Amino acid sequence: MHGTNQFTVMKLSETFWKVRFQNGPINLWDVDSLEELSRLLDTIEAAPSLTVVVFESGNPDFFIAHWDFLADKARVAAMQPGPTGFHPYADTLARLSRVPVVTISSIQGRVRGAGSEFVLATDIRFASENALLGQFEVGTGAVPGGAAMARLARLVGRGRAIEILLGGDDIPAKLAELYGYVNRVVPEDELDTFVDTFARRIAGFDKVAVSKIKHFIDIPTLPTDEELGQSLAAFFETAGRPENRSRVTALFERGLQKPDGIELNLGNRLAEIAPKEKA
Image (tube, rainbow, N blue to C red; front, top):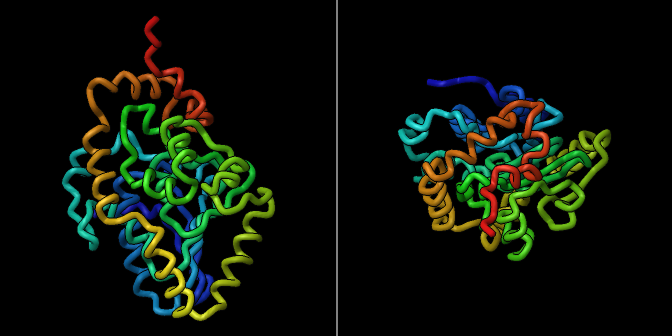
């Protein structure tokens, strides 16, 4: 059993919990994250009165940076399907979307790749003015594995989803709000109070009414099982191909997975690692 206590649960009342994520200097998402989130979802699903869960970061500069490129690939491949029947990466995101409580991401700092897919799987995204969001996988030759294509297309529309996913650039909070990537941008020093007030408002409503309203919104808006499965299959097929190894090497040479390197403006700097155009 691998247990690293990346998630700290604060049970503020029977109806309202906060969950803080912390994993290393830039909050990478890894295999332990998946296993811990699965156990946390078990707990959330079993809480009869719970109505709202707010997810926040213990790092003001990185909400969730992205998937850990150094994660044990054999351990990932050996993971058994979760309750939905999907590999745990798709399983946890599917379950997070479908839990009978309202889930809110309170975003400060950077959230990209797997981190972006995590917040897209929550119901509501509130962001501080300093937030940066993005899906940079195209820059490494990979397809996002957590159905970012399906989720973003439903949220922001086809054209903007293509812009975000194929541009691979960082999306500043204000632009993310304009596009619908996040619900609302709040001044950094007001974010905690705003999210807390909103969450407590919902937590005061009837659990049955809240969960049923969410269920009926889910029906036309969540990705289908087919989309979830195909997205993850495409990630496993495309990630780590030998022809793109030099791209990932170039990212590490520029400080990937370090708090003061390319992670600060990763999307913008992806162009540095792209092969030069032929004349």
